[in-house]
Image 1 (cartoon, rainbow, N blue to C red):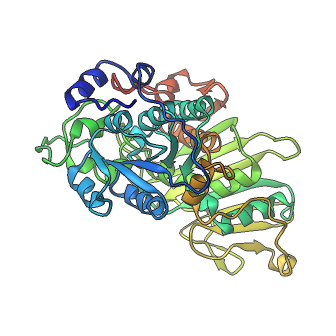
Image 2 (cartoon, rainbow, N blue to C red):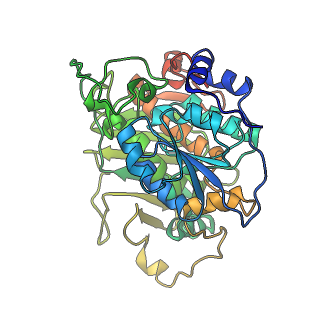
Length: 433
């Protein structure tokens, strides 16, 4: 029988143990199977901002029974549309008190791992925003816990479920481009925090600043950190590359089955101690994979664009990827625009290859169906974790200011042991995973 703890009892217990120990100490584990036609009972961690979109996508078909946000004003805005949902400021209380089948994590990057690990270890299926985690270690840990618990997981790179992206993967895998040796990806977005604020304005009465910090080191509140700008601060986000990489690199990563790179080179403005750059270039060398040849993948972002503006008569989009094979090239704009294959004459009469993957209604629907035992998620934490790992390793290479000889399976740069501090950064006591 579920015991509803008082707020004081919960805080006393949570403050004394880490996330993992809290789970082991007796958090309820919900493992009841749902029939295919029965609605899921879903809780949402991070109910404002991006969480609102995830909430509405799942709320169309499932029961939203609990909402959690550290900002009571944003929480109230979402709760107004889901009046029967219980509301919380601390996700640990929500997981402890509510009988949930599944959880959506839509918080800033630095709190993805603690929230998702706690949810998985309590038996809930988890949908977590991209990038999957805030560090290489956290991404690996989340994939491990997903395997250990057997829950259904999905990373929130929603284009992964679209027909246009899955068709790109099918074209590449069908061999239409021939062997692929090079990929270029780019995004013109930029997030940069600048210097750390020195002022200490009062914390807004609607915000629980300590809970917002979560595993991050304590510091005074400042509005420069949130609600959107956290992406540009290393303690909370990973810049534009971390924010957009899991979207734009997804198609070539999936199509070419990229795994662990062996070498990572990054360049940009001189690295800032606390915030991300306004421009970045990262170059990965991936080894041969079975019959697939080695691949060089280069990322450009912010004010640094790829070295050409057009291919034939096609202008490069603001964000996208270019997959270059021995027999052709494929230009895939991110979100908007047609996929174009070059040379045009060669591909003028190209017929779509036989579908290799299902076409769900949308990314959330694929997760929901898998939670009910129908099908599987294709951007699960195993896949999403590996991609997040090498993207965040690129951020580490930039911050270290040197080429990294990367040992992916062991999560280490063999020529740069000092990078370990960024591969597995410390987490505040009580928030460890």
